[in-house]
Image 1 (cartoon, rainbow, N blue to C red):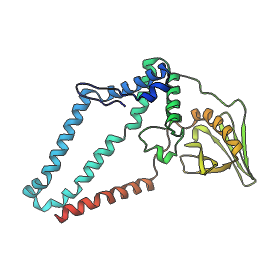
Image 2: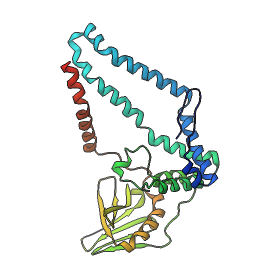
Image 3: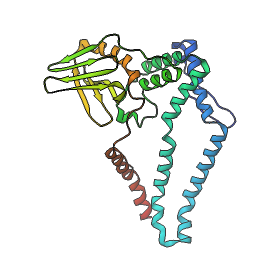
Image 4: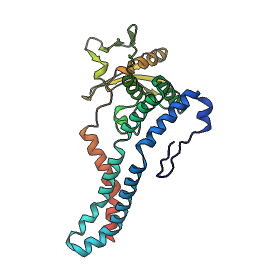
Length: 282
């Protein structure tokens, strides 16, 4: 954790991480946190402080000001919470970009991009975090998925992505899925067969279906989705194959659909509506 400050910034490590990670991995994570401190430099923090003070002053004065200057426009005050929420949304919209930039900055500072990759893998395993995320969740998460963070580091360093040396096939009833070096072929018996380039997929991952069972899932930016249960004996093989394939998927998942955006706006309105109602009642 790297709390920035105008006069002094700090990087905090837990003893658990220091005990379990190699020295070069600790250095790589330290460099990542330093990159965050570069992003949140004193000038940037001072700007945020001024914006914060202005928002506080505006929140305190907007009601009496409108009542004094334009009493007929008091209803405008009810929209002020949306201004605050919009500002918070804009502030948070660059979090994933900053994480990727910090990963790449760490790789540049240490000169060892693979060490940063190794540290991220260890960190996710230690924290029980998944390597791959549902795209609809990933586009709104604070951090990109581990798979895409590794992809970005390797792409920036010029590392050649690994490829499957031979095709890997999985079967369930009439469905046959074959992972090739650059594509997946998803055949649903005699009904249909889809050849999907990895670069055109938003996700190709394993999902816990029920306790003890896993499902192989693929989807593309158009919203099409394919799913197949996996035999327990195939899970380890699938994980190993997907660890190689990850580097060839789309660099970032597609954005939220218009209905997801509408849903979030409705949720936001439901959150703010009680505050507006209380304000009008007063």
